[in-house]
Length: 502
Ligand code: RVP
Image (cartoon, rainbow, N blue to C red; front, side, top):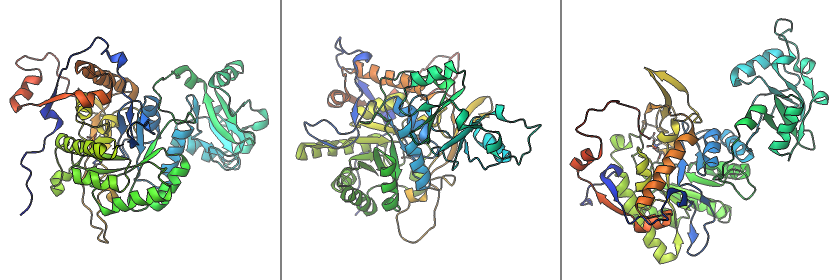
């Protein structure tokens, strides 16, 4: 006979926190949200930590290099989506690793032999009017010159004219040397009335461009998540098919941590992938596994070498796995069971394996609940898809701005590997939807509010660190009628903001 769980599985909405004594030192400014992201031994400092307990989802509509930069600058980490070619995923990772505030990798580039016609196409594609002319047309090739709209007159020039005939050549350019500070670059820009300063290395290869406007908007960010070379940290999603090619390329590109991206991680394919990575890189490359929803799945992945374990099946906002296949479990119940298994494993072995709660975060307080239930960090897709930095289009629907957001298992992403269970049969069906989410502005502005709410709740519960919070939090189940009591009720609201959540 099949096994039956006695209790129904539950979601975050069914729980609330009970305040503990708030000491006078429990104020949001004193709350430290540092959290481990890879396993470590009892008593040792975690080898990899984040400054906030938040990562962005391994999804085309969420985690490209722009979100990765914005999130790492706020202390978290993105896992760049894996449902793209190895080359383009590595190029996104490189862009994050090379990022320096105010210094940008040129993304409009051309060769000296190209024509004005091709220049116009690049301007249309990128929206940039400053174009770097490099010997091979790459962002880091030998710099031959710079092109701006001041260099040609469309009414006079032939579209066949070659770039080298009208560009400003390197010999006439003012440039900065690699290693120069942003302040020094900005001084050169102002002294010479420039809009853009190219930065080159000792071999005249282009390294960065510095634009006047970037310095103006540059703000210090004390929470930035940096590696030992002071580059921003970034993760990447991988699959269990092409990992022998993808992982070495990502490591070469400088990735800090990997995560196997699968809706069901309790598989031998995932076990093989973890073991191969651990053996091939002598345990030095960090990799998470998942997703799982129970003790068995957790232990399996940890024994195969996972550095962290991702929890959750079917709770994602765009996910229809539960409807399509009938597998999954309420996110809160999954997390509570896996966290208990993790704590037991820690008692037994002295090794602490961080947990990531993935999917289904609708309100900010769900993040706080996840931490109280034992997660060390959360992964969110919908949350980040709403921001300026996410890779998708902003559109006007009705009277509201929205952004597109689609699941990795939707026809649009076609990331069938995430759901594939091996074998030669190639029939695929959708496990995700294509949708809109309300546009919400800049990542940092929203994240600052979210973090403030988390810190405030932790203060109510008498905690100034995640570790303390996990040990001392008290949670209660709520009845369906008390859920109604929790919202505004029995009043006529003056303003109905349909898009308020986050
Ligand atoms: P959410 O934050 O609720 O939007 O959920 C994001 C999570 O949903 C991802 O991290 C992933 O685990 C899951 N996902 C992504 N695509 C799909 C799908 O198409 N079913 N599900």
